[in-house]
Image (cartoon, rainbow, N blue to C red; front, side, top):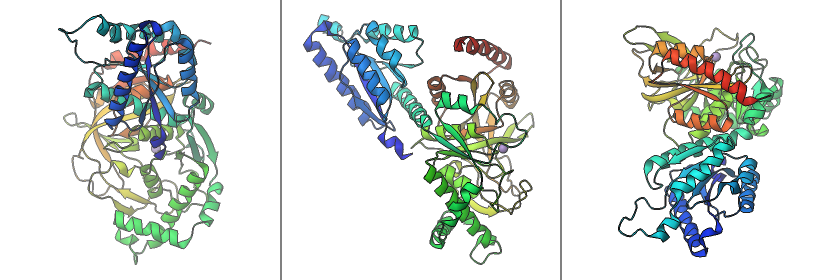
Length: 502
Ligand code: MN
């Protein structure tokens, strides 16, 4: 996640030479003030960098090529303080590979009614300059975001922040490497997909490894590293007494620390940002990695169980979007329902692998229990609950001809009763608009059982991300009606078929 510290968004102001030098000096001064004002507001996870006003087609083209080639530039904010004839933008925008946002704002908030003269009118032309620029974006069918509002006000700044977070995740996705320990769970359909198409679309690479590849990283671990990690476990969690220093299963804790250290070293050595495991392939590992996966996710790695590389990538991207925000993000699965029609809810969890970033303030307990699946030794896991509040579940599926993202907004609630016998981390939620509508719509959309769950980001972050990736997005929220939703799916089938061409 430290990579966000290097990322930049460029603030680019469009104009032309028609107005003369004095006006252009004012344009530049104003755009510097806006850039610095936005950057210093410290609302953004990356730097916002001023770029000199572009006034000709050549300057615009060069700026767009520079943005493409600059490895820290994650996208550009465009602003038309004056009119900037949009034919000048054609060569630049057709070359631009980075996402862009059109900030339809004004340097001044108010019309100075008693003072306004033609000099003022010459300078403050966003209202029509932004329309000319908008036309060429639409004419070129460029995916972009349009934000309207006064730049010092919180609402447009918030919209910009959401877009920047999505752009950061998009930039990260372009160089993401995903390691798979073992293949997909046998016979499972939705976790499959076209990895070549995924790389073309999202930029990330997916590479498979045998557990043998991990073996040499076990050999390099020394005793002091294990002792240090166990000390961290003891300081951070409430330990099951069987795992305490004289406990009957202390050896399992030591083994768990070795698994975490080996996986960490493997992922760091390979520059991976996400990974998958599968309980069907644990050759050479004594227990299914639960604790290790949970702690790696908390450090920012994306994860998908049962070989689910698409969800691993999505969880990583959602973690990048949520950098520095309150609330966690985790791999998740709709596990089981409470179908009391008066009080319906979903219990979300997984066998072990839920990220502790979503735990409530009470510290997690580190426990060891038998697991019927996988046929290995009892695995370690952190057990905790999740705070109440708004959340989302998101999933990306390969529909054959394209990728579809589905998002469901949820209200996270406390479990209706204690769960004294459930030895895994869990989340309880009420899906919007209600369980019946949400589950039916999700199923019609072909949404997976695995999701990325977040209480840090919202639908709009994923909306901007889907726009950058140019993939289909369907949202299930408080307004969803199943019959309308089915129509949207049918229309989208036609749109994406036609829009793709041959
Ligand atoms: Mn699963």
